[in-house]
Amino acid sequence: MTLVLGIESSCDESACAVVRDGVEVLSSAVASQIARHAAHGGVVPELAAREHLSAFPRVLDEALAAANVQLEDIDAIAVTQGPGLIPALLVGVNFAKGLALKHRKPLYGVNHFAGHIYGAFLGSDAHALLEKESSYPMLALVVSGGHTSLLLLHADGHARHLGFTIDDAAGEALDKAAKLLKLGYPGGPVMQKTAVNGDKKRFDFPRPLTGAAGKALSEENRYNFSFSGIKTSLLYTLEKLNLRNDEPIEPQLLSDLAASFQEAVVDVLARKAIKAAKDFGAKTLIAAGGVACNALLRERLAADCPKNVTLQLASPAYCTDNAAMIGGLGYYHYLADHGKGDGVGFDAFARLPEITAIRFAALGHGE
Image 1: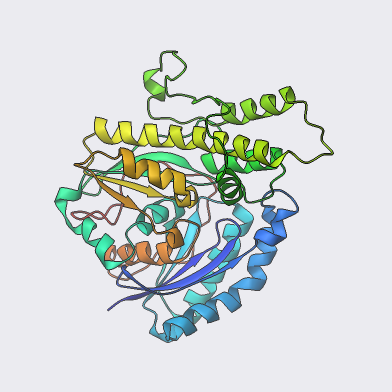
Image 2 (image 1 turned 180 degrees about the vertical axis):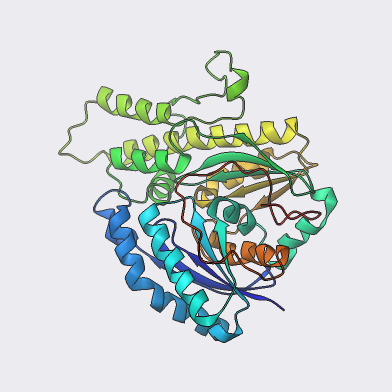
């Protein structure tokens, strides 16, 4: 039995979790900062860092107590190294380094993006897919406030990025749309709630890089995403409606705008993911990241996923930023080097590096 303590601070969630053997989540404690950042309409990196500083001791105690373990019982510590907001990441990384040094535990820097993918396999039933060669290749749609990407995973551990967003991430677009509609922050949940009674066909927002407008799609953008055009279209629509800045939008109109915008974003995500799954003969389609919580996206993927492809949706609890996915993936780092650890000399990084391998694949453990 191996216990890994996961620590996450890539953005505005201070999180700690204890995971057994990479599968069983014994605890997952998260301190949210949403209320602190709502007034700014988005995350302020320096404010997030200060909040992490005050929250981590409490969140660590909560995670250990819920798992009924002490730090002495922990076999390894895994911390989000990046990508993310550097001020926030540094707090978590240095907190983890301090714990590792004090308690003489091996420490691992974990890729947050890869952690999101692994989050879809937390739990014994889902995890069993990783052990079957017939589950590969897997296509992962990772969609959040910072990422919208398609990654192809092979059974030998090799991975290939098929596409990225060339401008806004889907979650970022939803945040910006919510701000334009004066709905508040974070945008994803409030847009979904507002869209419930809306007419998704009332406004025909564009579907960039899908060929839907009749314009030929270049080969380089076949699996790429773009969401800034949908946001700009919403801005122009609001201008055409001649809405006064000092007056609230009429409720039904507001719902229709939110529903139409959400429909456009989800349509692009689902189209690209399903096409890539078919084109590359994926046996498993994964959806992970904060926007994978979206009910419409989950419904659309379930409806359109080919019958010969297994759809693996991350549990809502592990879609948004959490430390369980970091601890779970950290277990594979621990196995790969037999518990030696990365030391305490590594740095945090802001941008997503090219991923060419994934540690948790059934037949190989890459980086």
